[in-house]
Image 1: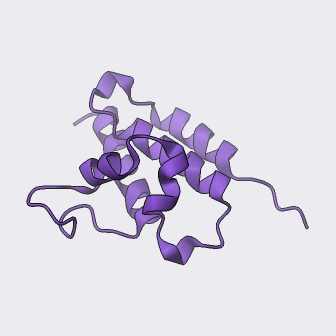
Image 2 (image 1 turned 120 degrees about the vertical axis):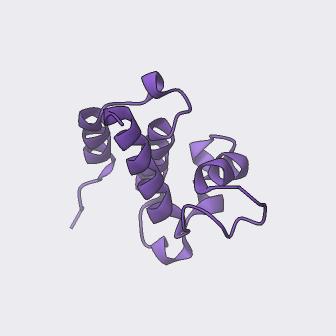
Length: 102
């Protein structure tokens, strides 16, 4: 185990939060996990996040959800050398949060 495997696991958690689904099972095909299912549903296209977004997140700005999806997909990249560091993940997630305009 190394930092890049931790980043992958964190990406899985982000996908769970975005989709409202468990990491394994309930995807209609034997052996299909949340990462594979997400890739199939979105074709890695962050504009397709509406297709997988948990309906309970309907009050979340779509731009923020798309950015979190993008970060999650970077985290679960097949090749560990292509994954960001946790520091980079934190920076990207901080940028995703839009300030309230009250």
